[in-house]
Image 1 (cartoon, rainbow, N blue to C red):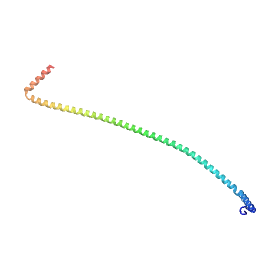
Image 2 (image 1 turned 45 degrees about the vertical axis):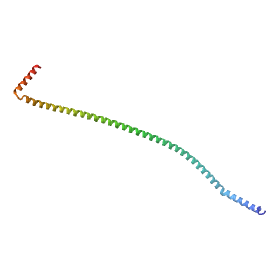
Image 3 (image 1 turned 90 degrees about the horizontal axis):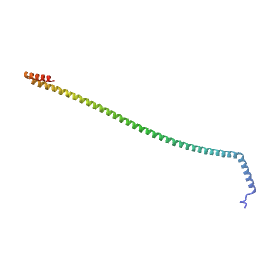
Image 4 (image 1 turned 135 degrees about the horizontal axis):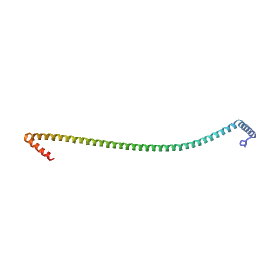
Length: 164
């Protein structure tokens, strides 16, 4: 049993050494250890507060980002609509101008054709009149080649003049 139960001297010296170690720890190590634990606790609290603040900021940034994306989509849709409207108006304007130009060119062409037709008809009439005069002249030369025929024609013309 001696081995199981410690001796009084051993207990005394163990207690004395324990108290000396406890005194030394209290004198030199206890305050720095507590200060370090306190600083560590404060830094953890600050880190948690910073993390929550960052989380709140991230949520705010996310909502701002979603709002900006929505605005950008609306702006894009508005710009696309304006571009479509502009394209439609340009196409309509081009069609209108092309139709006006076509109508103008057609009227000018019709007028030119009419003028050329009238000029051709006038020239044809002039040629027919010239040919008629030439033919009449030749006929009269043949018919009036003798003196009797000339006197007879003059007599007929005088009768027509008296009647009128």
